[in-house]
Image 1: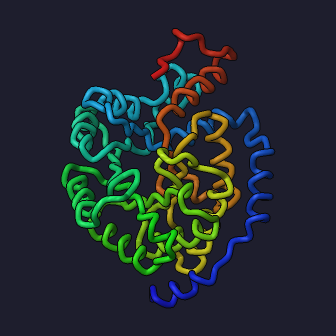
Image 2 (image 1 turned 90 degrees about the horizontal axis):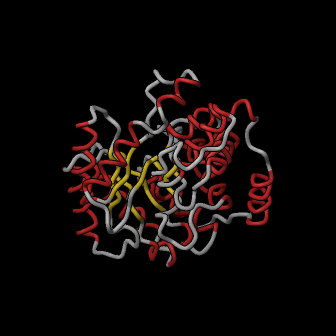
Image 3 (image 1 turned 120 degrees about the horizontal axis):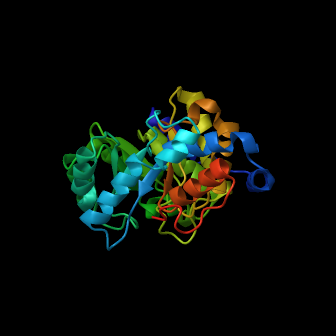
Length: 312
């Protein structure tokens, strides 16, 4: 039962020097052999939550985003890799609640069933009344979002109110109904790696389908030390309960090389079964363009000139 776990959680301490050593190891390594790179990059594409979260989002740039989600890599490049008939799309598109209808409409018009994820609960700061945070989830689901990326209330973590945090996330879970709950911890604002571990555990106990590092709006986003702590929490939770929870790094993941490092990290920490969009997502907006450039280079041996590739 939850209350037994809550008392256990208050006693946890993370070994920071060990985590930092492991993080250094990851960064120092060359992730993937050259001949496997294209395959890994395509795998990364299928795990992207293609995202736009700007104040100036409109129906037309959401439409472009949805088109790119359906056709993430140019057809001729996929043909050259013999992957043109594999239905490669991004994992989801991720937008603000007010743009969910636009995204649902655009994807329907494109005749594809890529899920629409919506941020919610007073994203990015989470500093609104609980009542409106819950209503925001319900409205996004009503509009057709099948995944909800909620933000937690950081205040509850910083003041050690673990039971209250658990109760809030339970309410988020309930408001989601059938939709998947992805819980953003905003790890750059949690104060310590120990708090990151505890918040990860609480979020999973409360029924999150995914835990996500960041909103992408904090000053510090997805870092390797934080990721290691979250991945170890996912592993511990799996050992304790048999439930697999997904992981989503977000914020500052811009290069194809970054995406390979993240995939390698997942493979090492959680194993091959986590290397699929059901359990691993990358939150990104500009990453896809760089992956397409690298695949172009892989196929042609040339680096893309400005006019060779759409730079969107």
